[in-house]
Image (tube, rainbow, N blue to C red; front, side):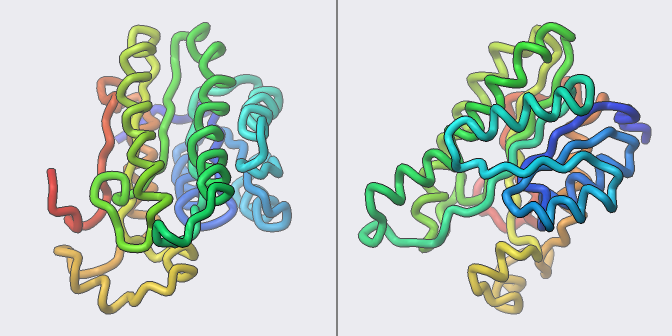
Length: 244
């Protein structure tokens, strides 16, 4: 299937490793022109060099950084058709151990970075009457995961944003969707010290997903073929969620 991504201009955030890097690779394989951003200059530059992409150093937890990254990507690519918002963390914690500063930091990193990036990208997308906005959230947004209080709380709210915003921009041929990864073998999973064997037994597919499994669906949602899919939060999880 031709996804119609040749020469489409895409910014992938959090693209120095894991799911972000895999999404970038999937879009590049379909012929998209890419800008990648992440806070680690060496890592994002290496991924960008491998994919023939532009590298932007950006700490999404800093006020205004996400919007600035979008503007920089638009300048480098000559515009923007696809925005993939992918933020790392926040760290694992239970409620009683989380300070006000932790809540504010997670809110800035997860919520305000998404709002800033979308706000910066929307005017041009509306003017060109084309856009794909994809937020990478988590299955924790639908079924809370033990010890991930910050992610459980804040990512769920992003799904409300996705659905409400999709209705405001659909007539301009802009789609807005959330994609929820389940357990995929990424550095994030390793950082959380998850037991791969134990987790695999809880997944009906019998294994932890590969980042490429997730990236393939992200590329589809960014494509011409997905033009009638909007306002959705979709899982790629091997059947791990118990709810529909």
